Amino acid sequence: MHTSSNASRRNFLQQTALASASFLSAEQFLTNTETSEQTTIPSNPDRKRVLRIAHFTDVHVQPERGAAEGMTACLRHIHAQTDKPDLLLNGGDSIMDALEQNEARTQLQWDMFFETLKRENKTPIKHCIGNHDVWGWLQDKSGAKGNEQRYGKKWAVEVLGLPHRYYSFAQAGWHFIVLDSTQSRGNAGYEARLDSEQYEWLRGELATIKPTTPILVLSHIPILSMTSAFFLRKPDQNSDWTIQRNLMHSDGLQIQQLFRKYPNVKVCLSGHTHLVDRLDYTGVTYFCNGAVSGAWWKGAWQECEPGYAMVNLYNDGTFDREYCTYGWKPRE
Ligand SMILES: [Fe+2]
Ligand SMILES: [Fe+2]
Image 1: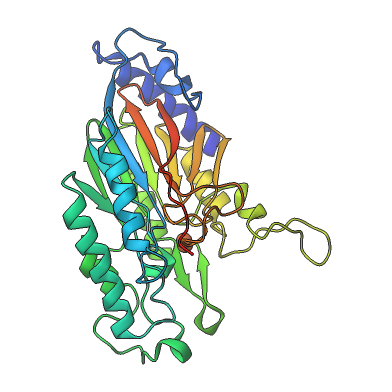
Image 2: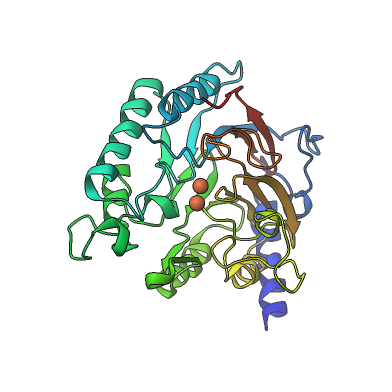
């Protein structure tokens, strides 16, 4: 069933794309998913860059360890690029933590984040919710009761100015889908997955986007990632390498199967593991893009120095990514 619907969609895509003389042929659009980290060889003279993005994630701002100065240094580094970004994507975990923190500490961290952002950034920006941006779920520590007006994700949605906890937008001929990875497991913490309401929304959203429009998906927690297995740097008690459900989407393969129906889903960006990797799987590239805070402002996390990614998007659905460090050294 999937095969025949794929075949008819591809036929439709070929007809649609071929009808547009100024665009790439459908075949090029479908197969041109291989890109290198540093360079991409143009396959068509009409290929041109349409958007340059700075994807920064896991800032984890806090009063300690000079985190606000680190965030400032990172934003200044982004804006000092000779080739400047058109758009910033904030991948979430903007603040050190709200899950376990009381209202006053959470407010203090959000104030620091926005004071720094407003002072240092004038470029358009879109935000994604990270697990540490969710207020109070670990009630024993946060003191929250669950009936507060800003409990859970409501505070982050409000302060980040989001239309909803997940949403989409269109820019420069691309479609952007921003997901909410974090679902509650009660006192056991959280799990990375889409709730059923969000999954149905994603299914509907993908079905409405023109097959010739390339799609970028932004999530805080990786949908698929190898570094999720390496996060703890050691196998489990059975000597197996396991991936915990709070480190990679537990529904990652369900989402991947959904993406297979839509060849215009090109690239997924995430953070959360504070590590950098790239996974190419069934026509989609999954980039995990490190962390501005590195090891939560204690230097590098494993091999990953504090940094952010510059991502170029092209009119033919191709892209490239470069991880940029900004020279931050931890405070004593
Ligand atoms: Fe994080
Ligand atoms: Fe996270």
